[in-house]
Length: 442
Image 1 (cartoon, rainbow, N blue to C red):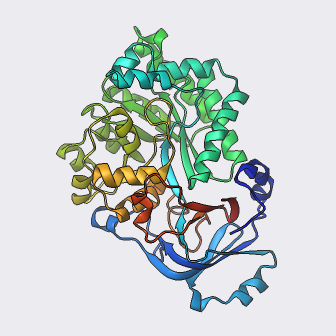
Image 2 (image 1 turned 60 degrees about the vertical axis):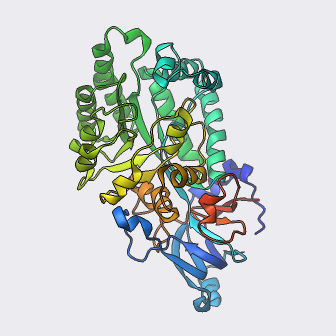
Image 3 (image 1 turned 90 degrees about the vertical axis):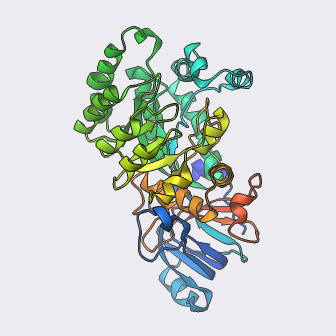
């Protein structure tokens, strides 16, 4: 699987990609094509989460960045495909696996600097909330971001984007929330828009002005909420900088009542909610998410029968972030109980400087298997079709289906599908393909 395009040349591929010049791509001799979908399902829930489609000894054909067909090698008519597409690029997968790219539906990947000094505090026993009360946590990131220029913020964030592309992610949601004032929130959102324009993965932007109450409003949080509702949201919407709105609805952050007010203000401007909920306590955030038709409710470490009942039958995707729970030493969300009750589950990385400094979705799969007792098939659905659903993208991403975006990766040699989450520390990705273009090979 050789190519002239290096992973580090990705920025120089954007002209090709964004001018609709993807051409054709044929992948031959696929050992197993994973997450095939002839029915165009939009999510998997309950028992369905243990079901994945696979096709052995397969081929896949993409044209202009879209999957045009796939099937068993015995049915491949390469002569006809070559006649249809004069600029066809052919890859021999050599019997390896081909997966749809990961969809990471919850990240804070645009940030400045790092917070490894707080890592020492965690090791010494300080809780997430204690670190925040001492001026660390989100407020620390807000100060670093304020002191960082927009160009430098983009440069740092672009390095992380290149990293996650190389790790197999083809769609990502990125939140603001380290600005905590209008100018800096807009700075973050402009960087997210620049990432969307300059990189070939799919990007969704979420406005998270309600991530924390800044120090200057500590004694007048109502005034900060007023700034969010009456100043930040209107300008974010006017500049079309966000797809969604989010609120950190949890103990020590924003109450359910405050969350409702902010979410309702966002809805007036066409911003659907995605809610941080129940990470630290039974906060009521899940119920608020369901009440207002949030696209997803994320974290959910504190989820009981009332929360599960609220989510059942709703359009809100329960999204678990095992990297964050692992890093902070939090309780694990009841994934098995949620699946047994009939819920869908999405998984995301929560890539951020304070509680989950990793965007490795393969590692997320492993943590979900090991810590949450999810089956390999369940975690695959959770990091592909369900996480695409949690971003509003499952009609175009998250499975191998005719008409969907050709975001794929080819693995190195491995013995089985289950080896992907089993070998938690191994780099198993050989070739990354986004919008039908080869982006990275080893």
